[in-house]
Length: 358
Image 1 (tube, one colour):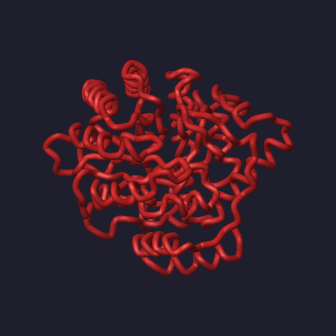
Image 2 (cartoon, rainbow, N blue to C red):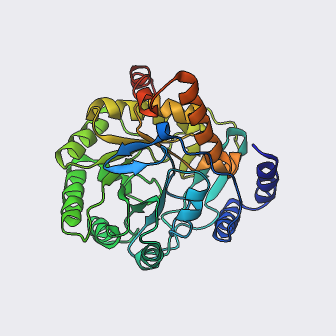
């Protein structure tokens, strides 16, 4: 971590987490912090789901919920950014406090509950950046009190297809009651059928990804793999936050309700990623998320079967220069190992991770 990152972290950590998050968004909107972009390396470029990524590292959904700063995030060195989760109607989310730092574990528990300004506000911002370079995905969700949650996803597809490089169907947040039940096969089959029908009739047809939880058992993963293959979904994002609390040191807040992200999620999410790669085969795109906080953890996701990698919580603890440092480290790695492309690394430790207990 740079000196500026350390100073910034100390200042932000004097504030409650949600205030600090808002301040970081405001800083990016104003053109701060200024970080040096990593040099572009042809060996880090890759084509996934029909899209050309300058490097495989992305900002995960949850940070830029309202599509306020996707271009500023790309300016930090990310190869792509995912905004959202965005629901049709604005909603305030769950009561505060609802974000908790587990500093000793370099982790966060959140129970935000899809707080966002809704489709209309996000669409205006995304429409204003239409035509700009850079891959920006849009993560769509359902309102907590919706009478037709699948209809909410259809509306998200229709609304954002013209602006999104790709769409993510998020049914894996633990903070909207009943949402994760949509991962069950019957509900999932109907959801994906209607989502893909909505895309087929939309003004544009971006790739569609499904974001899943890390708390699924083998039979549930098998059902999901079968449905995404049958419905011709373009890819899977593994994974969202976990309800597990194994081995945490931050005893005072470890019992808070919500999803856990950060360093403790790495092993669980990577094991689930490898199992999903085994189930869907080598062709389907997979984005690996959970516990990425360094070049090595990013590379390990790729070794376990990921095409692309995302982070969020890691930047809370390592600062805004983290994406640039990770991408620069990837470039050094391919140079040192004599690789013509980072893609050569994928699946090299697939068998190791696929049998790990979680």
